[in-house]
Image (tube, rainbow, N blue to C red):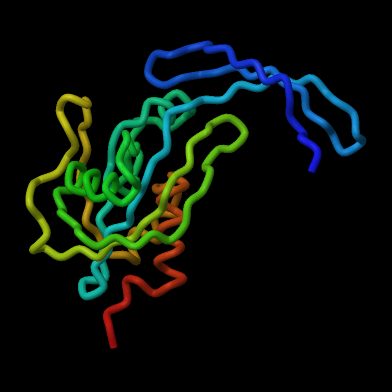
Length: 196
């Protein structure tokens, strides 16, 4: 197979919160011609997300927190309802999401099920997100959650009926893609239905 990309040059444009790189390269198009292209790619590392669900209660645990990028793009208060998530930071995805679930929601889950992984914004962001589901019970609650002070997290924990959460997609109150995908997965697979 002919190599379709060559002469890659990377230039760091910003390395503040995360890293923004500019790539210059030659790309072999479908007509067999080499085209010089330039693209910017935002690298924040890979992440993981989890939907905590309780079939007996038919409930889910979500979070609400301030997201500056949504605020500057029209989200009037900047608050977003989301599934628990975080960056891998050197951990494997399973370790990461168990850590994040406890930090953000206060639930210490041990068994998580990976359902898929996806690029969320492949035109500009390198990140892959690993998606998980995990059952929770009240006995797993070990703290109030809310995130870590040194990371300036101010997270509100929301436990709500699954049907209410699912309705928030239609009403526009849930606009976060990973959360919508997890809730739709739960609906399709009947995760929040009590066992027969």
